[in-house]
Length: 341
Image 1: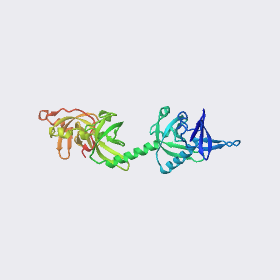
Image 2: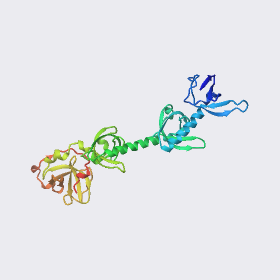
Image 3: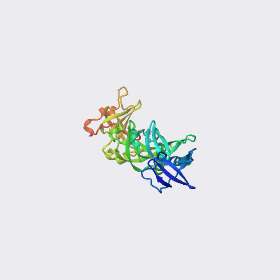
Image 4: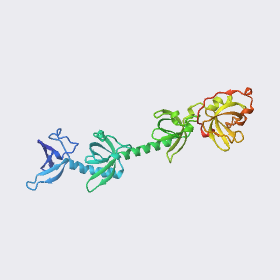
């Protein structure tokens, strides 16, 4: 108990009719000497005895550090999260007040790099102990570990609730040449280009942009690999339902070549609807390229399997006055499942 307060030290009753001197410099950062008053109770330890007169010199910060060290060891053994305030920026990271000093490397503060460490001073961090030096009583901590473990738990919780066919809301977070990545709230799923639109597209930016909130359908997921495949097409009109009744055999159309093989050409006759031109129905000696416009005549239409065959060779054989022309918009991508086999 504090029995006397002087300019730069306290006189503390440590029991047994003994009093000791507690210099302000032996107070921890958690104790403000300005607000201490006679009668206050502090936890202290004797760190030195004067050989001449037996004066006891006390330390509150050392007592706190010793007690804290025991708690730090316990937190490490139990893999528990502890909170501490950032007090200072030092080379390579920041110091935090645990009741003793702890070091958090810059790389262990967040999952992403931290720009200005000075902005962290005064902030509370949630930490786990990653290294202890028992001899020097030094501790290294990580908030990044805590954040990554929480993220993994959130991902697993989300994966446990996913089902094929579910509609989920997500945010577009990244675009790649092959598709768009959507954050479902802890885990990213991929919308392949073929699932972004019924029409063929060259890049996902033709349909979505980063930051868009989208309603996506769960197509499939691998819980172990934490991979989710999504579709945006579910919210779009099916071009087959819209246009199939306008298509009929002998239809002459302007189509766009989307795939060239030695045995067949794949052409888009309406955005989102493909037709196959088999070998023998196109000039094998001619040069065809994806994106090229060609005149085709529809040969067969199977509404059950959604398969259409067409001919380029026979276009000239059909009198123009006997066929209706269908003017269609030219777009450049269709889902693979729409391709005839």
